[in-house]
Length: 281
Image 1 (cartoon, rainbow, N blue to C red):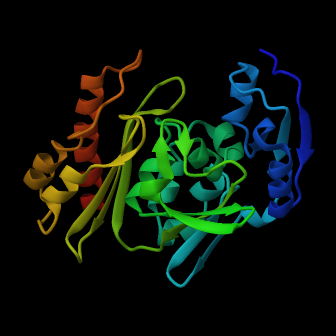
Image 2: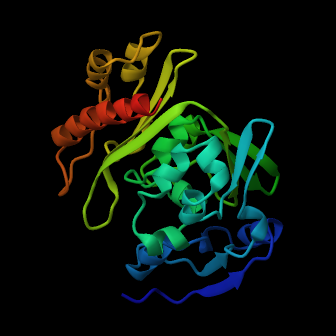
């Protein structure tokens, strides 16, 4: 398919991009890595009159650590996260997730910010960001605001980034906690039919378990987390807690998996992710 006609402009700074968004309103779309926008344009599901390319804004392509927090620029590619020595030491869950996204071409071009803003219910990043209690720094015409991960993923293909706004940075804690990410993937695309990120804090005896691919948006498996709060994570306690990984959730049903099968996979993958995290500890 061929996209509808559109104008193209490359922004050299966040402020310039925001000015362009303010000027063109709903007629404009932001282009980062392009893995979500370009296919949608080719299918004419999206027909912007102007595409604002932010891919060359260097300030948004970085990974840095300060005061126990890691700031990841929205334009940082999946591969840059996968290969980051800093993240391998300070937040190894993120390189693990990045290495399971798509293929080499996708990881070299796709961006963490673009993926999170797109909020695909089968995307890998939402589970990791929820499990880590990440914070999203969003820029708009009136300044910047910070949104917690639990409020960032709003619905299917809908994030908290509003009209006229741009995601700048994602902030995650530098943590020594053990973590793991496992998924049952759709073979052709690599998208998660059920993916689970687990983070275990042995000091506090708490766990964070986040699930993607199962519902219209990624979610924290609160039933599983509650079952393991204050409890030693053993094979038996993990198995019992994992059975609650789909409690209260309305699973998706499509050509790839029924709702019942997705709920089953959530439970299976939660058990695997938790046990993998425990084993690493």
